[in-house]
Image 1 (cartoon, rainbow, N blue to C red):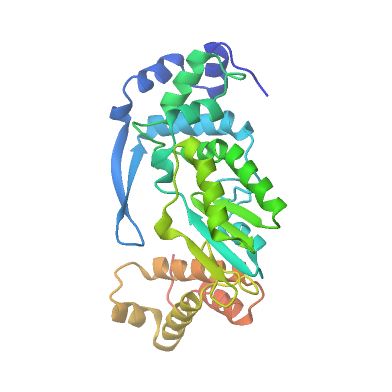
Image 2: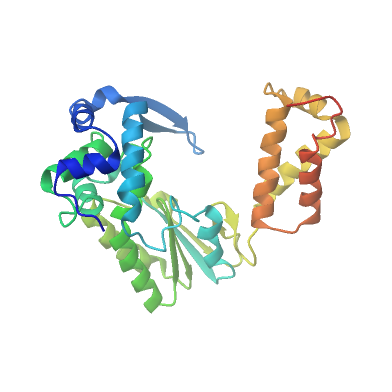
Length: 310
């Protein structure tokens, strides 16, 4: 691990001048814009989106510095090889699944947690810790539009993940965390898990969103990060049904006619690309299904169109 005691060595490795780093850190509000994304529950998610200069700085911090910091193998998001599939796979065929959600995850991570975990004193001189922390933080939380925030969240949660994982192993439980979504499977006792997790989150300034707690025994559909895990990995029935219907109507009536009937205004190529992505996702979850492989071949061939397309 490289130790940074002088600004000059940090500047050299980041490839960004000290003047730029300090100028940006002294006027952070000027380098962010607010954006909103619709949420599945009907609300909106507020994003603080950095401008190209600050985004470049945060990306370099991630690529050069944060990539070397330890994270837990239980963290399945925002890492090389991580995915919703990797998160769901350990929970297949369990007698029960318990899902817990961390409330306002990125917004609630403290500056002190970022400074201590992502830029620790045994690696960085104090002025550099302050500078790097400021460049990756905005107002009262981790900015959700910043490329550095996902990596930092995993680093901040590394000790928590280790404690929870060890506690679960002693009880024969399986634990994974995908961002703010924690999953426990085996034979979890909800009250015990909630109590233990809450006590470990509190020192980080984090709390559970109790409304999103879900206990799913094997006689109910067990859904983990959007994937059914009851007996084998599978996409939800409604996802498969909708995809199957769209493909059927496209093949029977033609892509253009189906899009017109649906009132879709995007290009045919964009629509077919979306369908292909959905088919590829379903095949990733359930590989080898002949109907999906045939659909993929049809989409790759242009969706039955004879006219040239780009």
